[in-house]
Image (cartoon, rainbow, N blue to C red; front, side):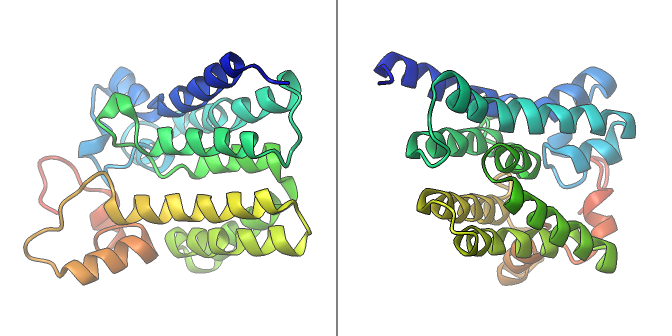
Length: 228
């Protein structure tokens, strides 16, 4: 049986490894910028790609997928000897995602967690991950709009888990992932709705397109000395 101390240390690790603002650190070290003031303001791979360096997107992705997303699950599976359907394992995964999206080191701002979700699914549900990536990447290739297709892929995750007869805990896990990402999209990094824009339109854009504006270039290429 797992000791309470083991559980506590594991959950603390899960949350704090999630909180590590990898893209923010790279932005500061490589270009001396605060990514929260550039582009989408998101502390993630896309913002790093556009405003810091394309070359850093790949190592960032490796860290987010295998260290942030993967390592807490692998600790639970192989060191703590938990079953893949264990609720304890699911809680660790959610702590990682919450830490990433609302990092204690960045005043509870952060990323969207898609790379972290990729790592979690790789460790817990690789078939669902394959379906998730196929739809998200395929949809993007057809429409060049990632926000809506990532949303569709996330909405379908619980359905895939159910149809594949996965343990019910993994179905709940998929629903929780969707809820966390939807909440993050709506609140952003606590970005207020501009006075000259309709709150309904902004929230709709956030939910469906994962940005405040209809124009992708205006959102992605924004810099501090420019108006939104």
